[in-house]
Length: 423
Image 1 (cartoon, helix red, strand yellow):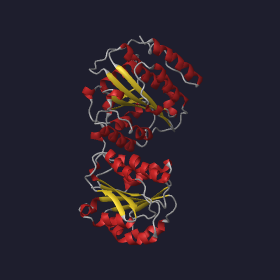
Image 2 (cartoon, helix red, strand yellow; image 1 turned 180 degrees about the vertical axis):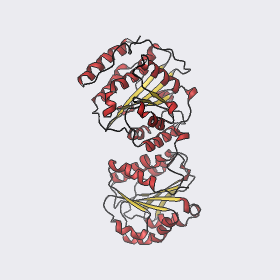
Image 3 (cartoon, one colour; image 1 turned 180 degrees about the horizontal axis):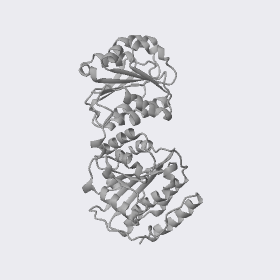
Image 4 (tube, one colour; image 1 turned 45 degrees about the vertical axis):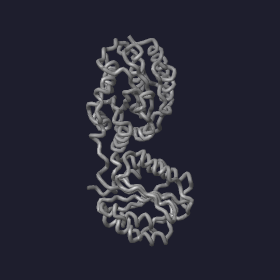
């Protein structure tokens, strides 16, 4: 039978949800005997991502009950369970990604309360922002997350940002040595296909069945079986591809005349956490920093193995004290250096610009023209210091403006995706 801790919590949860117009299915189904599970593992960590959209909120009690089963049954079974509960509506609840240790019911209830206090909203679900934040986690630290870390997505609404989220998941898995399992629970069968695309296949999705008297036990058993390290297989790494194969150059504006320190940091955050994670193979990524009027800092292709390597290079450079954007130097290196010449027809260059002089544009024009002619030269202007017409001599392939707001980040991502030289 279900434990005393869970019984008390579920009664408390029913009261809260009833006040909010929701009904917890607190009946004989909840109190059914536990089924026996056949898993060779004994220590699990579950990062649960709750769907708290308008549709998901109607199933909120069921989602939280699934989490509670995973956590609570460990105390009377042959495994240990730790957990983190997050939630997505039009906003995100992360609970600071704090890990609730086994049998710490007070901390688990605090995380549940944060979800219950979140305002539900949205007709579609996007887990993109939550997953980007989860990139910071070192899930292979077994002293914190166990040997069997698993992310469990609840899906009760149509998924948006599916490709971008899958790519971030791929990078999260690579960062954690392919030891993370991604699972989804489709609360509505019509979302089964999209849920499968998110987590690497239909085998990683369980369809919620309210007519099954052992529904919660069966879901918990399935999570344990799927999470066991003996059954772990790379999922998104084999099914999700980057936007396309291309040699990509990211040119960063580090000058001080057009960028405050805060704006410079926002540029770096955009590139490091939203643009670069779109790829998993970093051997074809080159980063270049227009550092001052006499120096360009750059790393050519085949210099990066992981995203952390790129971040280290960028972060160690910092912002320049110079007021000059050395666009001419950047274009010259990309157009005329041998290591880039051999890939010129396969190169996609993205130049971030906050400010640039007419003289520098004129100096850079010929090399920029060549980059656009043989490959693609794309400009991302930042703020309002640059008139688009002033950049005409560069004969760029495409241009977009970014106002430093989070609301436009997805537009920048799509701009990058749609302006690649694919081969």
